[in-house]
View 1 (cartoon, rainbow, N blue to C red):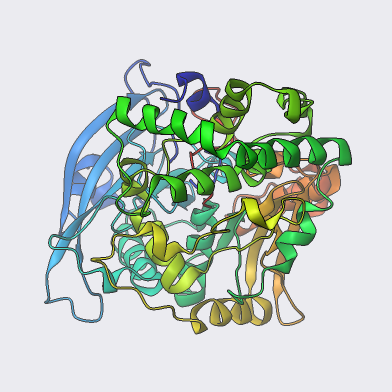
View 2: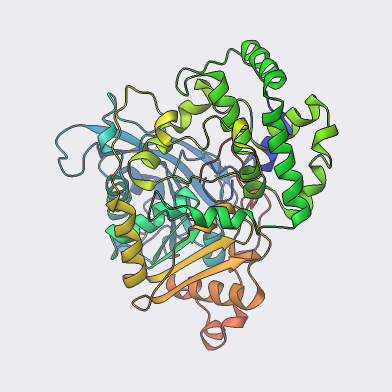
Length: 485
C-alpha cells in the first residue's frame, strides 16, 4: 500500500477534487445573524429553516467556532427532464456564517467532505459555503441509470439546490470548484447563467476536440527545466525496460493486497498505465524543487528505487479494480462527454510501449454502455468564449491539465484567465502575480457585493475579508493516485 505520508500531500481544488480539512474539535459554534432581514423569521434557527425545505434531511451537525456546519441529504430527481421517474439522495454540506453574507457554491466534481472546510473564495468574501457531492460519486440512484450522468443533469442538480436555498441565503452567490469541480462550475454557468453572480474556476481542463491533444505534447517539452524533464523521462523509460522483474513485483504486491485487474483487462495493461502516468503525475502534484527526489541516474538505480519512485507519484494500486471503482463516474464522463488526453512518448522506443495512453473505455466496466458526444465540450467552449460574464479561470504554470484550458473571447465581459507562476494543480488566487492577485480578489469581492469602497476605488487594495484559518482554509493540492482532473 502507498505510504500514509503521501495522503498528506492532498486536493486543492481544487480541484478537484475530494476536499478535506483538519478535524473540527473547536468549541460550540458562534455563528451570527440567521435572519434574512424579515421580522417573521428573525428568531427561527437556521437548522429549522434548512430542514423546512421540502426534500431536505439532516445527517449531522458538527461544531466549528464562528459557524454552524450541517451535513444534509437532498432529494433529487434521477432525471430532471422527467422528475416523476425516480429520485435519489444527494449529499450536501452547509457551512453557515450569516444569512446577510454572500454564499459560495462549491463542488470538487466528486464526493463531498463531511469535515468543515472553506474554499478560497469563501475566505475572500467571508461568506457561507454550500458544498455539493456530484451525482453518482457516490450519491447514486439505485439502480444506476448511467445515461443520466451528464453535465446538464449535474448542472440541474446545482440549479435545484440553489433555488431551494436562495430564499434563506438571499445575498449574492459565487460558484467555485477546482479541477473537475472547476469544470462543473463552468458547466453550471453555461446552462444556468442567471443563477450565480460570479464564477471562480480553478485548474479546469477544456478538451474541446478529443482527438487533438498536441498541446499536451508541447507542454511536456517545455515544462520545468531540461534536467528535471530528463530525469523523469529516464525513470519512466527504465520502468518499461525493466517490465519483467517489476511486473513480478507488481504481481506479488497485488496478491498480498487482494487486488484484481478485471476492468482494465490484465496486470500488464495496469502496469503500463501506471508507468505512463508517471511524468504527468509529477508535474500535476509536485513542484520544480521536488525534482531532487527523482533518481538522478535511472540506468544505475535499483529495481526498488525505480518501483518506489513510480509508486510514490503514480500509485501501483490505482489501475486495479479496487482502485478504479470509485472513479468509474469520472471515466464514464470522460468517455461520453468530457474527453480525455492522449500524449506520446518520443523518448521511449516503441517496442517498450505496448498500449500507449488507454482510453476511458478501458477503465469502466464493460457492463456500462458508453457513447461519446463530441458536441458537448464544443458547446461549452463556444459559450465561454462568447458569453462569459463575471468568470475567473485560474491555472498553474506547471500543471499539465492547463495545456488545454478555457479562454475568453471578444464577446466575454468582466471575465479573466490567469496563470499562477510555478504552480501545479493546486494553483489559486493567492499564488498569482501581485497585480493579477489584487485584480482577481477585487473582482470576487465585487461580484459578491462586499467590496469595500477602497477596493472599488483601487483594486490593489483588495484583501480577503476573513483571516486565514489553518484548519478551515487548507490549500494543499489534492493528491490522488490517478491521472484525472
